[in-house]
Image (cartoon, rainbow, N blue to C red):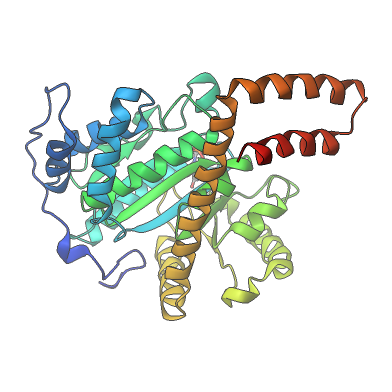
Amino acid sequence: MSKKSALHISKGVEDAPSINPRLRVQGKSSLGAEELLAGIRSGDLAALAQGITLVESSAVKDREQARVLLSGALKFSGNALRIGVSGVPGVGKSTFLEHYGVRLLEREPEARVAVLAVDPSSSKNHGSILGDKTRMVDLGKHSRAFIRPSASGGALGGVARATKEAMILCEAAGFTHVFVETVGVGQSETLVAQLVDCFLFLAMPGTGDELQGIKKGIMEMADVIAMNKSEGQRRAAAERSALEIKRALQLFVKGHEEWITPVTLISGLEGEGFEELAQDLERYERHHKIKGLFERKRAEQRLFWFERSLSEGLDRLLAGMESWNTAKAALREQVASGALSPFEAGEVLLERVRRNF
Ligand code: GDP
């Protein structure tokens, strides 16, 4: 692969702090935000892990420290290429990330790879797609890699927010590539798409109806598609599946981006097709940067998170007001019994809010 590989980014690498192999923070239970930021900036992975734990924390005592840490880290962030990796459970996301990540690190001495996860199930049962780190043994051992399982607890929106903040800290630590892994079950993709520059969807052949499980929304969202498990005897089936997907994609040409989502055959297990996939990703990055779409997308994403945090904050604010809760409970009964239309009830409640302003 050429020096200018797909995942190479020109911006920011020279600013990246060198890695400090000594984990200076290890053993200390809690550091202040400034100390943590200094540790993170020096490439101290234990400080990074501790910083992420801090921003994930919902404890009131941690919120202020987390805010200070994030606002300090923000000015050093933004230089990584952010790639979402999605697909149904078992499609081979972890295997792919393990091998692709290691290959990237071997080919690019300046590269540093972080893998974060958004796991919709983690908020319910504390299961985590990356909880089992043994699936990425080699990458996990690499001194220029960092793997972080999904934050557990809280709603999906909270997990996504924690991932966004973890991403900021990873970028402040000088990571050049942040992969965000998520399971292909719908809602989580929508949020992950708002976190990343490029959305890579992994599909696999031989499931009969290839488009089953690849929902319309995902098709529209995918920037690059890789048909995984395409090695050996599976090759012919993979080619057929890729063709089917390409046909379906014609319905979803991203006109405004002038980008046609490529479909490439790979084997995450054998490392086959990585060169072509790297080129797809590089083309995507170049195309979007040249057209000014890269920055525009990030600006839109910032606005998305702003709007979202505002509406979630408003919900929390109202839910904390007793008069709101009492009035709402009474209206709920009337709506459930059919005595009042849901829309009228909504208006009644909103009118009360308006009058209070
Ligand atoms: P995930 O749930 O999407 O993270 O999938 P995993 O990475 O855990 O892989 C699921 C299973 O598929 C494992 O048994 C892998 O060994 C296997 N697998 C992953 N990639 C490939 C591949 O490229 N070819 C083949 N034949 N098997 C693969």
